[in-house]
Image (cartoon, rainbow, N blue to C red; front, side, top):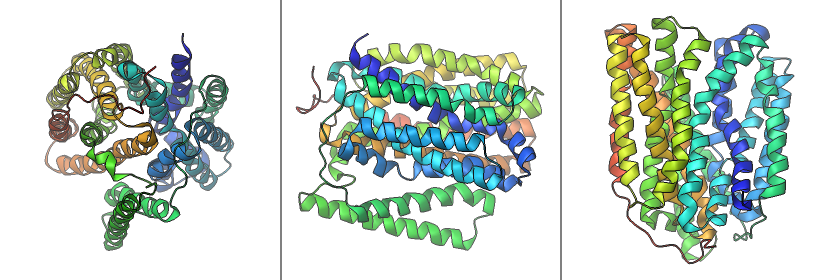
Amino acid sequence: MTLVWKALGALCVGLFITLMDQSLVAIALPQITEDLGASVNQAVWVSAVYLLTFAVPLLVTGRLGDRFGQRNMYLVGMAVFVLAATACAFAPTIEFLIFARAIQGFGASLLNPQPLSVINRIFPFHKRGAAMGVWSAVASSSGLFGPVVGGFLAGGLGWRWVFFLYIPFGILAIVLVALWVPKLPTGVSRIDPLSAILSLIAVLAIVLTLQQGPELGWPIWLFAVLALGLIALMVFIWLQHRAQRRDQDALVPLELFRIRNFRWGSLSVSTLGFAVYSMNLPIMLYLQLSAGLSAQLAGLLILPQAIVSVVMAPILGRLTDRLPPGRISKIGFGSMMTSMALFAILMSAEVPIGWLLIPLVFQGAANAMCWSANSAISMRGLPENLVGAGSGVYNTSRQVGAVIGAAALGAVMQVSLQHTGFAQAMGLSLVLHVVVLGLGFLAVSRFRAEKQHPTSANS
């Protein structure tokens, strides 16, 4: 195994545990609520605060990799993540746990954009699809393994062991990254603090509004928060324009969006985040509340999807390097739309559980095609000085898409439950995902062949 593949393997350890967190911790929430005497709202914030502090700083943390080095930011982020996980494992109160989860989410935000940046700097242009295939296999399957691992840990050893699990894997990631990931030259002299603050305000306000709106009943003050975020976003964009005119380092260089494949790739990954990160909610509710499966059995039923995705993603990543851009992506988005439609039909009809293996396997293959190809095509045309900023934008697009998806799905499920039965409501809610993925299909249809940038790695 060459050094670049060792480096990728080391980076993927941390990527896997940070992305698995939401589905892993969700399984333990009932035990946490009972053991710490928490209210339902407090239990929700154990997951919600992690997502907030993960998603909100991504624009900044991606650029920090360009400023201080991707390897350094990854190591700092993983150290913060592990220390916070340790605090979570020993949390004496629900308030302490929520605070530690906020710190843990920030650690995840520091390290999460760095693997994409490193891949685009250490792999040759013609091998980045294969590398992205491995990256996407890890990223797309992480949430699918969470319910299985979380179910066995929480059910057998208790909820604190969910957080203890992070400690050995986090330490392993730190050691391997320190050994195998090279120190890469930095290309940004400074980061504008005002731009950083405005980006945090804008993303926080938008994500908080979408995340908490359905639960709070959309009060007027929440729309004021959204308006503040949109104003901050407009000022932020103006500052990036001004920095470009003055030939200064922008936090998010607007030239990123002049790169065709990156522009359309960022849009399409938001539709993937919308669909993939929220689809398990109605499926798991259906399996447990309608079909009567235990949490452990429901988690095991999802495993074929994860296995197919892990096996196929590296293979399809290599094909991405050889085929015209967009071919695998279009097949992938079409397959994912088909799998969502099948879920909607089969769940609404309350068919025997075994029939759901068909869309589950289909979804695993679609995951492999969509994530690996989309990431490779979107990122590999970026020059070295923009990969950190590009990774931050790309990851932010994915996470904001996930937040919008969760909010929209919750609203659709509530409306459906008022007009139809439980199983039908869970199934019909996934029709929304078919529509949104159609927009992603149109976006990836715009991919075109691009030449290697002269500053990209070519060795």
